[in-house]
Image 1 (cartoon, rainbow, N blue to C red):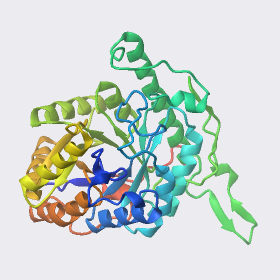
Image 2: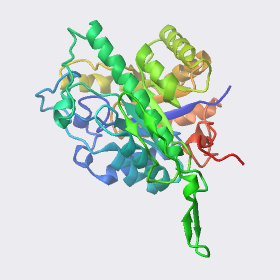
Image 3: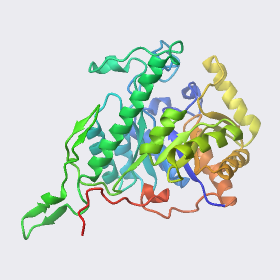
Image 4: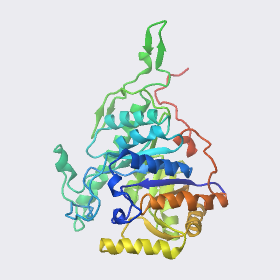
Amino acid sequence: MTQIHLAVALDGAGWHPAAWRSPAARPHELLTAGYWAGLLAEAQRGLLDFVTIDDALTIQSADQFAPDSRTDQVRGRLDALLVAARIAPGSAHIGVVPTVTTTHTEPFHTSKNVATLDYVSTGRAGVQIRVGGLGGEAALFGRRELPAVNLQNLETPEVQQLIAERFDEAADYIEVVRRLWDSWEDDAEIRDRATDRFIDRDKLHHIDFEGRWFSVRGPSITPRPPQGQPLVTVLAHSTVPYRLAARQADVVFVTPHDPAGAAGILAEVRQETGGDKLRVLADLLVFLDTSATAGTARKEHLDGLDGAPLFSDARVFAGTAVALADEIEQLRQIGYDGVRLRPGVLPQDLTAITDLLVPELQRRGLFRSRYESTTLRGHLGLGRPVSRYQSAV
């Protein structure tokens, strides 16, 4: 059987809202570089393809549509892209994929920031694109007005149109980013002291993008990244974001909850892409332990501390490495390229992934025993694209 791709999503003390209250968590270290560097090193020890680092433009909230007033959950975070740039040089193999919100930021900035990350990580950078607009984001920037969205008006034609437009904007955003990555040909830098020529100006290109949301001439100020095109990823839950992933992403994260749902989601995604070039990974939120009862007990204890059962867009798994490997193997048989695991508690469940799950997957021949590529695109079996502006020879 073809081997799977395995990634981990990092967020604060873990993906359970009460994770920071676990004795295994390190809440006093959440805003330190050492904490994040340690998580990355642990993931690399498990030979994972990459980690994603979660981020948003609003403070965390139990209400996805508005800020809340809770004081018993983690609030406050570091900028994911800056964290990635800090910790990536300390690793040697694993990919690093921070989250960037498109709705209130500029693609020019994101292009050069992620290109810089690709340089400092020597070709192991990516970006997870998030479409914003909820929770009062617009008021934080004061540059645009967006109507309030809530459960009551979410399905109205007006709000659905707004959501579709935000994803169309994100598609243009990624297109600008990708064109800017290509705007320097690979050999534009000459660095020839004898002729006093550092660059070949004929190999820098204006992208001249004109659209509804962006008008960007280019070129970038950063030479073409080592991977040519760093990895672009999207989390998607329905048809509109599936289309965004099909149009612009290299990897899409989806959230099936059972085998029938997994097959249906994969079929819809493949229909949107018209092929299998897009890597499709299923998200699972995990409490991994040496027994099913121990994993379930840890989750239920945190549920009690939080005052409610854990709710997640992704399926919640609590159990052993063998049982989780069974689920991953089933997803692979359905046609998924791999999984992205969200550890319920950090670093405990991340360590369990590397110590318990990875050896089980290796025993089944489903996962690598060593890194065989030096780039993130290489880990995923993706070639290095030629710049769209490359001069014909």
